[in-house]
Image 1 (cartoon, helix red, strand yellow):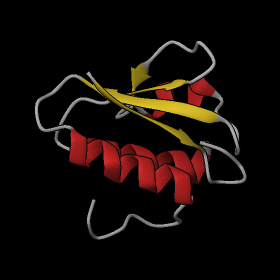
Image 2: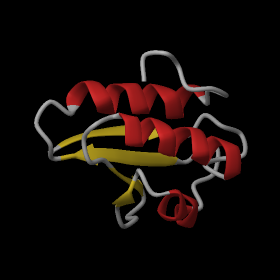
Image 3: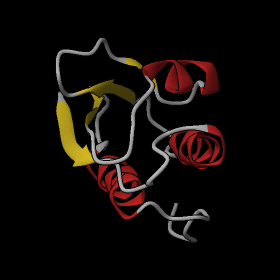
Length: 94
């Protein structure tokens, strides 16, 4: 299973607009991805808005993105960059 540990770059965390941006990117990734708080959180579906909001991930907290799918490395890299940089829009590469 491939995984990336990344610190949430959005000051407000994964709430409302940032969560929406992240979920759209996770859906577009084309592989199943989970997200969890690094401090012992249960993984949830990264393509589910309700699941991502339920994490309550705050800015500066570490999260874990993971996927067991083949060829998931590039998708995880793109999602990790999106979360770390706290982008306000989806980059064209997603």
